[in-house]
Image (spheres, rainbow, N blue to C red):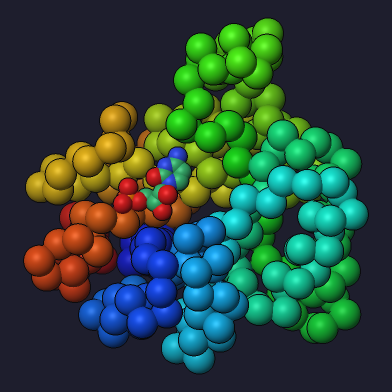
Length: 237
Ligand code: C5P
């Protein structure tokens, strides 16, 4: 896979018009992330637009519900032909397994390839303190993250979303074939913004990231296409 194909750019806008404007400015980007803001704001038409432009899609809706409901949501996602899809590991083993088998079934019925289902281990907005005092989880945060990754792996999922700092340990424990999709990536020349513990794109790949989710360093740049090309050059494509 070329370095260019490893970069996923989030469409972090709320309207279809803004999303299309971003797609038009960055024709060289092949993999886009659609999250809750755009999906709730603009509806699934944006997914059709991406397919018409032959783009790969990371549908980041972070499913978290009972097994029957997440399975139904996964079956619906197959219709859009998405490539990556997220679910909270905290939904539990049965929900992860139901979601995974629903994807495989729906893909088989429609002769499509199954989207890669990846788990959110723990939202990075949650601290060790939140985990211990509010959620009453009696294990240390890194151990919790690793356990959620292992449960996702045992449930047949394709990978997880993690910070680049966690990627190498997760690769070690879950194997190289288990995808590590990493936000929290910043080139040295970009503002860090609210990403507190970021690595550069090259460091993140070296640390074991399979895909990089890079937003504002590209989308908020004066010249987004030049920023994207610069990152690709740094990665060596
Ligand atoms: O602009 P930036 O590069 O920070 O965007 C990163 C993308 O990855 C955003 O869509 C953000 O919501 C998402 N994300 C993140 N940190 C996480 C999980 C997801 O930044 N821990």
